[in-house]
Image (cartoon, rainbow, N blue to C red):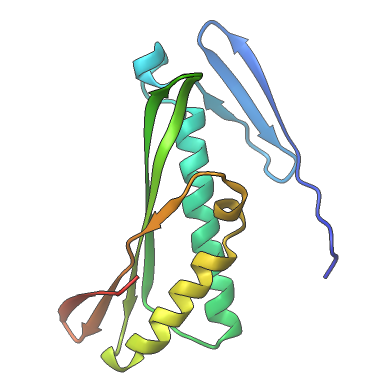
Length: 156
């Protein structure tokens, strides 16, 4: 594997209150706008949404890679990312980002291993590490036993 990888996106303001962003790695452009609170359109991604999508997507793909390398099988992983934007002295800024992964596994016996893998994912997530804001993690694990599901909160 190479030691350096280049990623490139181009964004342009198309007209009015809407823009497009295109990546070299994807065939379709994404329409974006300012958030509704700042005069944007409903039904379009905002830069704030895209940032949180990058955080959640990176956590998800990092966990998948770590689980695959560790030969760990899981049923499902859902990652929610929430962000709070507040007015600061120099404009608005993200004040907090919370990542809440919910991992579904088939056996409660895997709990200690799950804690290690989730913690390792937190440490290795490239996008989270690139941000200057502190990120809070709230992992949860669901154990599926037949048709019953029990939830256990993990210690952070």
